[in-house]
Structure formats: C-alpha cells, structure tokens
Image 1 (cartoon, rainbow, N blue to C red):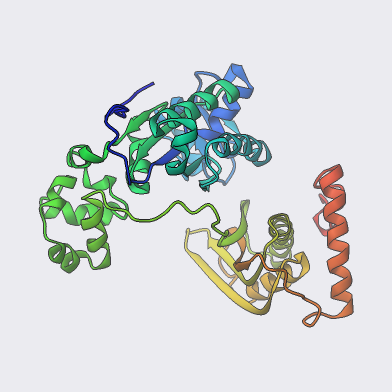
Image 2 (image 1 turned 90 degrees about the vertical axis):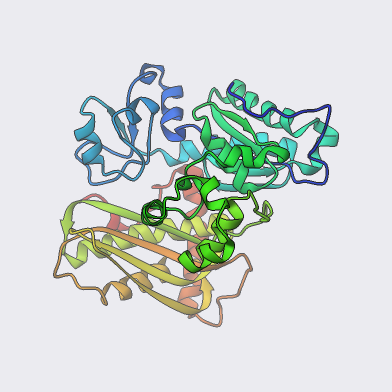
Length: 400
C-alpha cells in the first residue's frame, strides 16, 4: 500500500474540517474480467467489443495501457496498437453488480456517499470517526475490504475537500493511498503540473504554458484579477483550486440528470427503416432504466454522429414527464425526421433529461389506449425482470 503525508492521530489537525474520501477503482471493467478469468491476469485486456467493431474502448487493463490504449479510443485503433490484446464485450450487468457490492462497503461507514460512476465515489466520513476511528483508519479499512472481499484494488485519496481527495486518489495509481494533511496542502499542490487542476484541458494548458505557467505554484503567485482577465470564470476557479479551496459538499441525494443509450453501427447507415429500428431498441432500453430508477423525464434528445465524426442533436420537451417506451420512441423518430440522412450515420443515441422522481399522472395527456400501454409496459417489465430481458420483445427487434 502506497501512502503519502500519513494521518497524525496524536495531533488531530482535522478538527472542524471535513474528512472526505475519494475511492477510484483501478481499471474497473478490465480488472473485474481478469478477476473472473484468471487466464487473463497479466495480459492486455480491452473491454469494449471485438477488434473489428466500430465501438470505443470502455476500459483497458494496465497491461494494455502500456501500449497507449485508453478509454474512449476507437476499438480499431486499440487493435492496431496491440493486435495481441484480448478484446471483450461490455458486461454492464456484471459491473453494476460489483459496483453495488462496493457501495455496500461504503455504506457501512457513512450514509453520505456520492457516486460519480460505477467505479468511483466520494464519501464524507466527518461524522463517522467517533464510531469507526480516524478518517485515515476508515479509508484504509475500506481499501482493505475491497481487496479482501472482492479481490479488486482501489486507489484512495483522503483530504479536507472533494478536489484534493480526488486529486490524491489519482496520484499513486494503481493501488494507491494518499492522504493530504490540511497543514501541508500547498506542499502537496505546488509541484503539480497545471494540467492536474480541474478545468485545465489541452487548450487552456497551452495558453498557460505560453505565459510560462507550468505548475500550481506558478498559478498561486498570480492575482485573482489577472487570472479572471485571462480566463474569465475559469480563472477565478483556478485561483481557488491552486490554494486547495473547494467548498462543495458530498451530495448523497443527487438525482440523475439524464438517462440515455447510444449504439455504433458495424456499417454506416442511411436507411431510415434501420435507423428507426435502432431507435426503438434504444428507446426501450432508456424507458426500462427510467422505470427501474423511478424517474420520468420531459425532454427527449436524439444524437446522430456521421461517418466524418460530425455530431448533431435535436431535442423536444413535452408538457408532462413520461417514462413510456412508445412515447420516447415516437419523439425520437420525429426528431430523426429533422436530421439529414444524405450522409451515412455511424452512431445514433437517445437520451431523456429534465428528470423528476415525482409520480406525475399521465392520464390527462394520453388516451385510454396509451393508459393501457402503461399497464402493459409494467407487466412486460415484471416478466423480463423474472425470466430475462428478452423474454418479451418487439417483433421489429427480432433478428432478421
């Protein structure tokens, strides 16, 4: 276990400060696959699809990363970089199950957990130290339990705010453990490159480098007004982050902002019938997820990416929140009619946002037939939950 700036239990300088843990699983999808199939251990593993597929990399093992393979890279490029890599499909149900097990470990120590994705989360353990000991001890125990109970490694950061905790968890990957003491924040931050600060991408970094600003220390020596004049709102944010200031609380009750699915075609498509069939499948997937989460949404968004990687989107907002597959599909299909099909399409996606967890009645908006569809949809969900997701499906989606 790698540690830095260890917690001093004899002189607790964390009094009256938050104690925030950030847990980030190491190469999560790929690590789960290696754990479940020991023959994959030590080999370059790429999760995302077959080598000849049109998808992108969802995760890569650390062995694959040595070849420069990272998330969001086209599968074809990953195969070019490492032809001997083992390419696996995404098994989202498996990863969600493991993620749920990890979260149960978190909830043993605090109810204030803010998941950022399946493989990372913030935990506020400020109120947990009386029962479980120091924050350092809690963080260490969580890390050990993930290893012992799930046979997976996690990198953990502990600090007095979210920014520092997340930054700390990333510094010693994989299997890292970094603690940022409140009285040593600048010692921790100053040597780091400006790229480590939130909001600093390639363009902003290039601008900063032109001004001979390369480290956090360099930013800290500038006045807030100078940074704001150069970068606007981002400049004010950089000024605070360079001093380790981040007042955002860990939010355990955050509502999902949107639910969506997209698919990349094996071959580029211009045929409307095929595109609408894909939209139907995506709409069903989105609707089912919304109902599982107990959410409804008002805005349906269609995303289209052409074969030259240019993307366009179209949205429509309804008067009333919905969660029905047929309504989502109807809106997505209408939005598709607003998009040009003269150029081949490589990816299409459907998203519903403006979500609410309130049970709004849909009776006034829809006909009796639509009300019957709502009941039918609930029955289909029950059957598919019990006997498998494809137990009942649409005839249009059957393999041709």
